[in-house]
Every structure is written in structure tokens, then in C-alpha cells.
Image 1 (cartoon, rainbow over the protein chains, first blue to last red):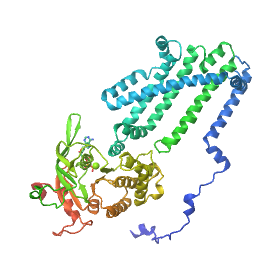
Image 2 (cartoon, each protein chain N blue to C red):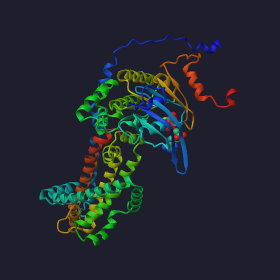
Image 3 (cartoon, rainbow over the protein chains, first blue to last red):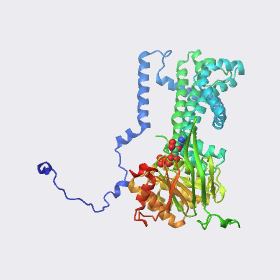
Length: 293
Length: 269
Ligand SMILES: Nc1ncnc2c1ncn2[C@@H]1O[C@H](COP(=O)(O)OP(=O)(O)OP(=O)(O)O)[C@@H](O)[C@H]1O
Ligand SMILES: [Mg+2]
């Protein structure tokens, strides 16, 4: 027995006198080296990737040497600046954007109404679920021929398909967010004796904000793609065209660098909205509140 | 307050109870089934009481507290707060829950309290800020007034919830196992702090727990509930520490016996 325990040496107890050694630890930020800092910055990493992609594009296009099929990066950028210079691209962009906003906002209004109805009654909830199940899988662009019959050639039919693109994603996500709000938070909200409107605006909406934001993002992405497709394929709005129309028209005249410039604009704008606008909203809200990581 | 015909009735209380629960039966309807959570529970809470509801898990303590909070209507019996029948949830009864997610994550510590005060119409914004800072200081979180809840530890969140409920200055504080999810060390500290706060303002609190030591520590009066469905088993006094009673039995042992003794002959085996 005692041999087995021989390995266990009795050790003295250790008591540390309180010291201030660690006092500095809590506050000093460990300084990162220059490269570590650069690498830690997501924007820098992504920018480097973009530059590499652009270089690859340039090299491939030069090797291919057929500007009717695949223009070089530099000529595309040239066409882009030229388009901006003549005002063709900004005009097309502004047109597309205004149409998009009209459709988006109208879609949001309908989504709010539908969700409100769904929140107050069981029939409303059933209606929302049924409609969403039916229409959500239907690509909005597929409704355009029908919309053209109903609303004629012009903004009306485009807005109609945009509403369809936005409505279901936003309503579904918002409603799901309302439903999954923790019962404790609900009870806390009720404890303050808020009116039902106050309760929705001050408890339900912020509480469901992560889901709502997801809905807004998905809705935006759907709407943006739908709109470009609608302009491109149907050239819906004759007269003053948007970005899709700009691409379509230039393709008809075989000005391929301009086509690429139009596409680049679509990409840049999409990136801007998704990575700058929505990212900022996200950082100021759900991330700051620790509701999403 | 006292009507001329009153004195002939019960003489046990010199003062009218603040909260009076009379023969309350609470049920949940789940699909086709009815689950009875509590059956004909009665008790009176006096002003400045630290009244503890103690019972095994599932005996309907939370359900009872939710009913007093107004979240659930009794199927039988009635509940009166300061003589008025309890209806919907309202700021005259402030809740502290067991869950850590009871703070609004989109508001800072200070704004959680300010919101409670302004949304319930108790104070205007400026006074609400002042009072919120006062109570944040009281629970020892002055440095964290501007922090968002997700950056706090569990114990700190519960402190904020307590500060928020106290700042409302409700007629009665309803606490549903507010310390149950905390470690033993923090828990003891929080119990002491709660008693300290009580010394300051002598608020009335209805406190739910399933820990016998916590009930003895916190309460001046303890209601024992039987296992599912909850019925009142006994209502005893507590001196704040586990003392020997007149019969030479420790309070904790007595509670243990009362809670778990079986009725009928089997108990004698
Ligand atoms: N939402 C609900 N729907 C149906 N039954 C419920 C619901 N909540 C509680 N119950 C039932 O009511 C009874 C009492 O539950 P309650 O939560 O009040 O117990 P408790 O005493 O608070 O237990 P614990 O100490 O574990 O918190 C339980 O048997 C439970 O099954
Ligand atoms: Mg409970």
C-alpha cells in the first residue's frame, strides 16, 4: 500500500499574495504585426482576390484575342468609364434603381400587412403559409408575361413582379421571427402594459430583427435579379431603359465591351447593396446586440 | 379601507393582505388533455413579506406565479391584489424570470430599465434615466450601464433584471427562481444582496424556489406545495437561518419531512 502511494509526494500548499501583475493585461491590446493586421482585414483579403481575378481575366482575354466573345478587362473598364462619362450608365442605373425601390417598398408594405394579419389571427397565419408555399417557389420572372397582359408594357408590370419577388421572402421570414421570439421576452413585453401596437413595434419587431433582416436581404436579392432579367429579356420599358436594357441594346449592336461594362455595373451595385448597406445595418443592429454572430 | 362589518371575520391578520390567493386552481389545456398544475391553493401575502413558494419540480410554482402575473386565468378561485381582482399583466407586478434571456438584447443595461419605466408610463424619459442609474448602482453594475446584455455574465444579467423590476417600484415583485441557473458561489452572493436591498426599501416579494436552504435564507414565510398537482401542504415561518424549532427539529428537516412525508400508513414503515 505505502509503496503505491510513494509517488504521491506531499506538496506544500501555495498561497499567492495579491499582486497587480495582471493589471496591465486587462487593458492593453496586443499589438499585431503589420502583415498580421493586413491579413486580419477582410476587405484587404478580398481586394487582393479581386485584383488577381481581374488579372486572370485580362490575361485570358488577351490570349483569346476575340473582343466579340470576351473583351479584355481593360477595355471593359474603358467602356465603363466611357458609359459613365456620357451619362448613359448613370441614367440607366438611376432608372433601374428607382423602379427597384418602388417595387421593393410596395412589396414591403404588402409584406407588413400580410404579416400583421397573420399575427393577429389564425386564418391569417394559415393564409400566409398557404400563399407562401404556393408562390415562393415560383420565379418572379415567370409572372412577367402574365403581368404584361394585366398591366401592359411599362413600369406597372415590372413593379408587379418585383412585389412578388419581395413579398413572400419578407413576410415569411418576419412571421417566422415573430413566432420564434422567446416566450420570456414576450412575457416581459406584456409586463409593461404596452398596447398591442406598441408591443409589435417595440418588442416583436426588434426581437425578430435578425429574421426580418434576412428576409429583407433575400427579398432584395430576388428583386434585383428579377428586375435585370425583366429588362433584359423583355426590354419591357421601351423609351427610357434601365441597366438590363442598356446591356440588351449594346448586345444588339455587338458592342461587347459595353455589354460587359453593363454587367460589371450590375455586379458592382449588387455588391454595394449587399456588402455595404446591408452589412452596415447588420453591424449596427443584430451584431451589436449579440443576436447574430 | 376597513368596512364596519369586517372585524367579525378572520382575526389572524391585523392588516389586510396585499395579495390574497383564494382556492385557485390552474389548468393547462394541451390538445385534448387537461393538466391540472395547482389545485385550490390559498395563501395571503402581507406588505413587506418575503413570501416563498417552495415545492418539488413540476408542482406548479411557476404556473401560480404566472397566474398572479396575469398571464394565465384560474379556472376556479380568485386572486386579489390590494383588494382588486387580478386581470391582465401590468406594471404593478414586476417579474424576474429564471431565464437569462429576459433582458431586451437590443437595449443597453440602462435602456432596458429606462424602457420598462417609460413604456409602462411610470416616468418620463429624463426621470427614468435618473432612476435607472440609481438602481444599476444599487445592484453594483454602475460600470456596465452602457453595455449590451450579451456582454454580461449570467449573474450580472439577473442583477439587471432585478434592478429593472425594482425600479418599477411595483406593488409586488414576482421572482421565479431568479438564481437557479447560477453557480453556488454567485447564488449565495445574490441572496445576500437581495436581502440587503430588501432592508433598504422593504419591498414585497413573492419568491419561487425549489431549494430548501434558499427558501429559509430568503423568506420570512414559506408556503410548501405538494407534488403534482400542487396543493398547499403547510405555511411556515422562517427566521432567515436554519434554526431549531420548539420541538428540537431544524427548520430544514421539518420542511423536508413536510414536503416528502407520505400520507397514510406507508409513511410509518
Ligand atoms: N405550457 C404548458 N402546457 C401544458 N402543461 C404545462 C405547461 N407548463 C407547465 N405545464 C404543466 O404544469 C405543471 C406545473 O408546471 P410548472 O412549470 O408550474 O412547475 P414548477 O413548479 O415551476 O416546476 P420547476 O420547479 O421545475 O420550475 C407541470 O406538470 C407541467 O407539466
Ligand atoms: Mg418553474
